[in-house]
Image 1: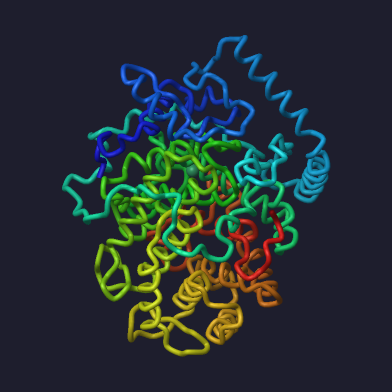
Image 2: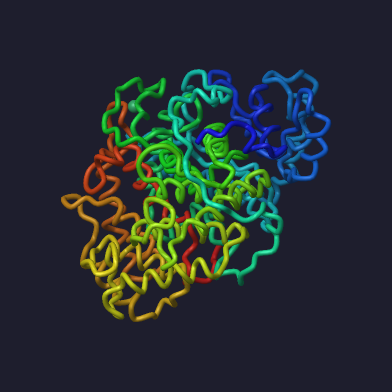
Length: 550
Ligand SMILES: [Zn+2]
């Protein structure tokens, strides 16, 4: 469903593409600098349409709090020297201005980094990066100016985004059926529903200053954080030249050239979204952090492969799974950066989910099929990501999901769940069903939830019974639930995953595909879910606790 530029004719995206083509956001890796690129919406266009687009872009562009906001956005890769000096002078001034309020934080980061390196001499390289972010606690964006303390990837060869044209061999040859959707998102600032608990702050843990606290208080460790760092590097090294990741072709990446095994089935939008999510979970966006160019090209590829209807199912297996994953990626990127060029694609993706819902409330591989709990869970997570990004999600859609869950729940307490109505309960569907219930409003003391948590604790993560899909959902349920159940689960999950990470060869940093879906998901799927699981400490703030981190 490579639909060409007409479907993505928003001025900001055009501006982005042109800006990327000009080498601003997306420079060949051999020429990458560590300077964060501009927000996708912020780059003014060049070329014959520039006047019109400049006007429109000025409407949608979000003023960036970054100290480089007034740099020439369409500057060549090597800016003219006076501008560069001026830019760096501004950064310097800005840093000085922020220094007094961030000095304590910086010291804490330095001490943490030294401690971490001393504990993990054999681990992947971890670079200490001192925050130069704004001290303004009121905006998440300001927090996210702080780069993650992770070494950026090695150059991965020349990457160009302008190759995404009709001859993309991964594009489907037949038109993909589309659903009728409502008009364009015209009231994004006015959600129709009451905002859920934690809305707007559930992503707050992803800022650099919150991460260290949450890792320590939530039960993570320097070792688990080193595993995350190595995993992100592996993902970056296996991004394809066009900005995408593919479950079946990650080893075609220039840095890999077939050295890694474990490819899965064909899946382009789903693979790309799966790879983007661990970066976003760690606060790495297209506007900040050492992986900014990696994230930017991945997000751009997703946007360019979205149909007018919002459809992001892409090519290959998974379909509505892939759509939900891509929706989560767009919603999270929007929520973290407030880049308004992402609002419409994210809203259209949410609308597509709403329109794909079966009349009895479920979702399955294709739109409007009777549901299964597995696909339903991903749609619920996507819809909640949209709500948390203050996008529009109708109450009736989530209420329908709740009705579907009523039909796959076998007991009131403990609440155990089946794949489809009438089937046997499984631990995996129970974990996924319970997480949906938590996000749909069950209180912590709901007997179905407390009983379900006990059931999950009888099925702790064990290396001799690997099941990353179950661990991914179970970990989130227990993390939100908190307390001793979480401590017990976490100690098993964390150490098991760290032990299972590949430590040698080009696979180093990834996870060998084992357990359910190992063949269809492959190494990239396994690695992404393992990373998201290890990032649980800061990916989402716990639903049932007062937000300790502002
Ligand atoms: Zn490789």
